Length: 328
Ligand code: NAX
Image 1 (cartoon, protein in one colour):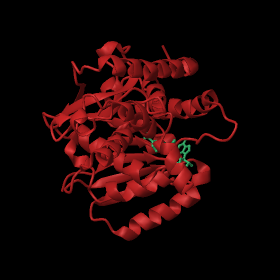
Image 2 (tube, rainbow, N blue to C red):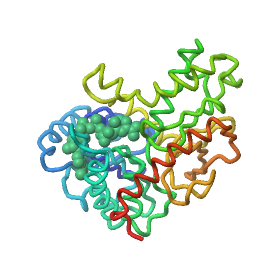
Image 3 (cartoon, protein in one colour):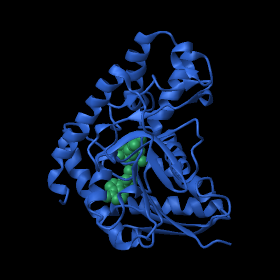
């Protein structure tokens, strides 16, 4: 039996975690021969509800679930952590400006970045889900000296999956027929789902969907606004699909990406596509042997370049708003 992998999930009493935790414990993410030590991090007000989550996880009697530790202490929460899924953050409330949200959540990610740097295992990898996830990830990374930038990721896979589903419905195909669908930029209402480089059954999307006006208009808008549409229908934000996207992100980062495909995740820019080094930006990514790189020479075209610039500008604005949380 392998020794347990330490997986920390923050916001562990929240709704995304409720869908996510059993799938981690079952072996779906890290493999069916990999025991898991689950560290569940919450803030004090969430600890009572977290007790119930722990009871349910125990009642599943997962063979691979070595042990569970629930805590509100940051140092304990990240002690020896190999993978950290940072899901917890404060939701935007009525009357709150984007800047206020960035400030409140930003401070959370300062503390978590510092605690990860102090306590985590040497091979720590981090996926930030809590919003605004790109900038939260940037803040945590900048406050975790000593941990390579290559270990930090923010989630845009849900946007990729949403885009695939929308294209498949329009084209009358299955979402599994769609490859090379990259999300560029920020996980926000400015994100750019690149339909021009995506393929359906290895052919350009335009072969199946000649309606360019729909692709440039409703398609992009619907993917950008899908989170709001879910809230409108369900009265709650996406949880099952977000948990699924987090699982697929981690699996893709650990696997070898097929040569004819890529996946979407926001990582620290290496300067590719003119994006300032270190900015956490979503790109088309290929992974192999635990190393993920930005796919080069993707031609965004005139339309795509304008869209990418808009979402990039937003990322730069967000960074400026949290400048005091980013050590030089
Ligand atoms: P919930 O409000 O159900 O759960 C959040 C949990 O985080 C709560 O239990 C809360 O007590 C806890 N929490 C707050 N501050 C914390 C801290 N400092 N340390 C530890 N735990 C803390 O939200 P949920 O629906 O689970 O969503 C979680 C986050 O995911 C939100 O920020 C949400 O906006 C974001 N999302 C990100 C997505 C993405 O694609 N990147 C999509 C889904 C989702 O909107």
